[in-house]
Length: 390
Image (cartoon, rainbow, N blue to C red; front, side, top):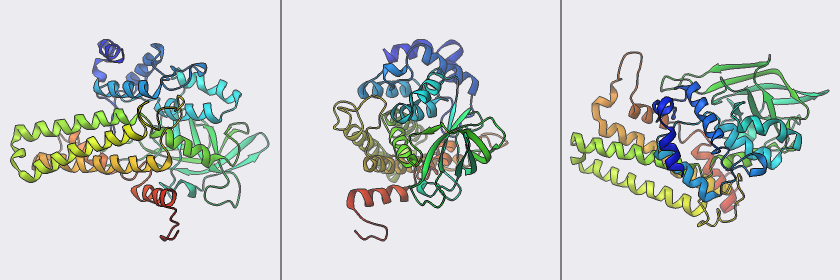
């Protein structure tokens, strides 16, 4: 059903959107992709994982897996509303008050309001517990000051969910709160960050006395770390299967190029290509075993919209795919040879494989660096404290 609907609807005005908006290209056809997201909602495909009583489709983990895989196979465009729908929406359902749910869930579902995520900071990237952005309660509102960085799509977002320190003098994960903050106000400044790919999907966001209502805390004040962990668990959920389909397409294109150009005659390159294929199968097997549908231990009884990866499983999964994809970018350049070092045209116009190589440099950093993931595994799985002691 998903496959047939996508085949019928990725046509006409939407036909040109196939493959648009991927990593490093989130600027592409933004208004058309926004219209596409609204088309998905009107057809009842989104919000996919939300329970029906909250306006969603109530899809099971198996159904979500199918949707994300078929969506990627069809080459459907990258979503512009995913931060609101796939991250904040489930958190609102889990932690939000009835008033917050009534205010925010319908416009998120209808793609009438777009969201961005205010987590990382210049001094607290992957180590979110070190955030220093602060908020103090003044009468009927929170006053927010600080800086966020690497904020995807902040330039188009209407709202931001911001992890801020609301208890002066608190340290690490204590004293944090998740605030829902309007972006279009005095006291909020968005500055684009130019990336290696030449584009600027990421931004710095400066809060200088920005305001939000006293009632716009997601969960209780001081509960922000729990909400943030929930959000990260959702982020690494079944959507990873669509990501793996895209990875497979990239690897298949590399293999085809190696055959056409004769690069596959190099035994070392053949070995690396074979290892890449094995590695991709490992990614899928691990995901199916830990986060997949009803056949997996985690997915069997997972309620719709909730994360189904434990923190340790999520960290292992992130390590696996980030390292694999970064190595794939390097393999692409090896297969291309010298031509991979030349831009397509003036003004630094890159082809798909050059963007893959450059953007994948960040895979082992964003979403939690390798070092942070290893620390989570060491502490949570093996009970090791910093410094290697139990």
